[in-house]
Image 1 (cartoon, rainbow, N blue to C red):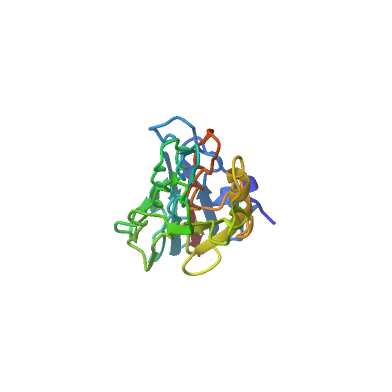
Image 2: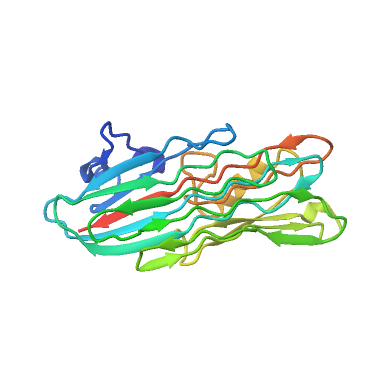
Length: 269
């Protein structure tokens, strides 16, 4: 079975030729994605990732699927945590194309990791070309962090959720949630990590993990991602997965987990 690492292409001129994928994907399918693309420099995202795909001779029926990037989790200090970033949105569009048509695309990058109590907004994926109009998938909402409450407390990602446009199918992003000391002690704290529509079901959802304290955020996000097919901090990232908000106590600080990059999937015949 092909992995995202084996499928990764790095063409010099930015054009993704369908033939470049023929040894790894089923005939008539191409993917564009980027793994482990994030920095810890506050206030700036990675350089924009632009590519193009050209329709082969004899191919006219093309379907584009796009996922926006996940929203980044918030940072935390002292005794804080909260809901992580929301998932990216999803859109699918089927068109009739002509051989030689060129489709330019921008792939949503991962967010920065945030030290602030509000995480980074997820990035947008878009494709432009013949038969497409305003075809884009926004990135997920930012995660947030709060001082620990003294009683049972739960909440989900605030802010406007990611919206998709221009497709035959358009699905909003999903909210991540946080559940704190609602069963007498913190061993029952829960993180509901959002993943987008179009991956394993029609509408997306959340992966449920425990949340226990310092230094568990990366581990818990990896566990959440494994429930839906891939490891979150490896090259087999889950497209559009929201990043977890840090959880700290006792005077230390933690950055939030970056929201994962988006994905473009092209099916043609």
